[in-house]
Image (cartoon, rainbow, N blue to C red; front, side, top):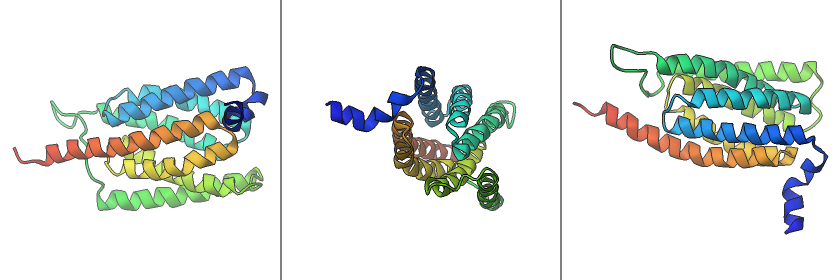
Amino acid sequence: MQPIFDFFFEQYYGYKTLFIILEIIAVIFGFLSVWYAKQENIMVYPTGIISTLIFVYLLWQWGLLGDMMINAYYFSMSIYGWYIWTRKVDAVHFTPITYMTKKEHTLAALIFLGTLIFVYSVYELFDKWTNWTAYVDTFTTAIFFVGMWLMARKKIENWIYWIIGDIISVPLYFYKGLTLTSFQYLLFTIIAVYGYIAWKKSLNKNLQPA
């Protein structure tokens, strides 16, 4: 049992107790945020804000700039998404789940490419091209930037981006020594699949003629 425990959590032996506690709290609130997203519950945003704020601090301390920028972006998009999700489109209905339009597909591609350029520039500025994980970080950051933007706009395709990014992040964070965060992304992957299914059912129901 001890060798197995060491394999997964040995990297935490040198961490400050405060950092471990904060990561646990951030993981719990991150899990809640994704769960609420699956339920199409507005609590996705307050729980997500707490999680991202903690991760911004931790990732800055650990020097993981790409991951830190993802969470800083999540924070700002959570505020935007909170507004969109609570905005009424008429006297009764709130913003519904919809498919992406052609214009939104174009904007998503621009956000993806813009994020790649931005993260590349930041890594160049801070001389962070010291490990192959930096290249993966750049790619996953772009994926998650698009996914968060689509979620804020209640586009069902957001789940596809989350699933792809989460699958990549599971082994990536484990390699970085953040086992708890790696497990979090494993749970995120599972919830994202169910989230897509749940939103798909809700969307099909809304599209049925009265």
